[in-house]
Amino acid sequence: MTWQDKLRKVEPYVAGEQPKIVNMIKLNTNENPYGPSLKVKEVISNIDIDKLRLYPNSDAVDLRKALADYYNLDEEQVFIGNGSDEVLALTFLTFFNGKEPVLFPDITYSFYPVYCDLYQIDYQLVKLDDNFKMNVNDFMRTNSGIIFPNPNAPTGLLEDLDFIETILKNNPDSIVVVDEAYIDFGGKSCVPLINKYENLVVIQTYSKSRSLAGIRLGIALGNKEAISHLYDVKNSFNSYPIDYITQQIALASILDDQDTKAKCAKIIKTREMTKQRLKQLGFIVPDSYANFVFVKHPDIDGQELFKALRKEGIIVRHWNKERIAQYLRITIGTDEQMEVMLQFLTKYLKK
Image (cartoon, rainbow, N blue to C red; front, side, top):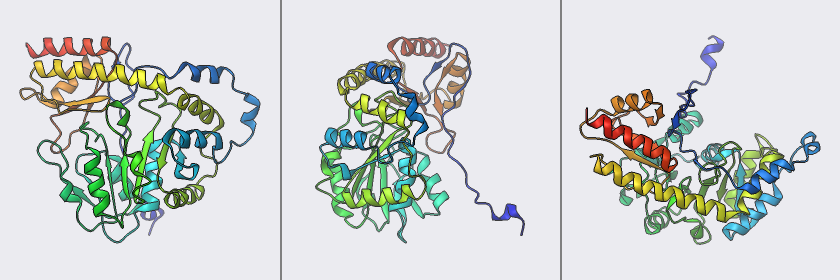
């Protein structure tokens, strides 16, 4: 047996493209089109560079306390990691260790099956209906854990709190993870349910609504016992994950919540305008509650439209996968960026 035979071989997650195209309109990775709070700029301008020679506070004490206050939780109910992807990876490793399969939708964040393959976790896909909605009864089967985004990705569809509570009540022996990466764009967070259901873990990110994808910060919120085990697993990898600068930036952002809310409101307004205009052009547009729309046109092949937009310097996301190959996921940019895209689509459809 060669050394190659001993390698762990997995099919990795493919991130959104970061193309180097001059004057492109980048609408493929759900980044916020507006910059972070000006208080973040102030923090960066006043960073004490001498502190960079030291290890950061391993528990991010000040940030953890601010987050606990923000969510009306105890500090021991807050976990902090390097982006929600790392938090998700540690979540799979910590909570999904039973003999039964983990359940998640068949059309969802494509990192979930990658984690399962990497950690050799059995899983079953819960098939969405023809309108990409989840059926709550499909989660009433034996499992070792449940995870889904809310709003879902890439569809943008939102489930209400009654849906989530039904799953929690009927799966008391499994951790239910709700991935709320896009919750600030029109949804209602299930964080208030944490103290009611000990099997609930909620994951959020600073990459979307807080315009801080570049610093890599994600959080998990849950009961104290669950979060303590998550820290045990994290500390088995790295005891100093959140660097000093990231802690200072994130703290400034959480203390300037009005800035975040104002920018989310702008994005929501642009999203609703974009949905309406796309429908007028004949697109099928599910009712997104995220900072993107998931659309298809009945008369144009999805990949053809993806290539046409790219040729014009407008970069969107396309998956050549069963059930969604005809759809494009389009990040909501500024009004000006969306107008350029809509004008191009209007002309293209007249050809």
